[in-house]
Image (tube, rainbow, N blue to C red; front, side, top):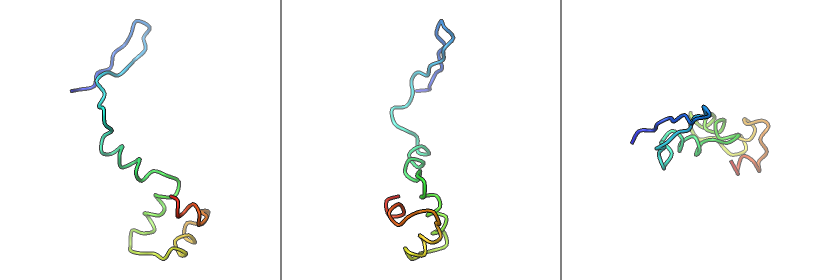
Length: 69
């Protein structure tokens, strides 16, 4: 079913027939979204990094945040 944009009598737009589940890209962005996850993935792209080395590479991230994110 295709989404359709409807315009009401006041000129406001609304979308009808929107998918009930998010698309794969949206799911992925929700999964890797977060303040530090992008940086963590970047620093791990070449292979394993020790936890303390990773926290040093992240700079402003405290150990609490790097384990939580």
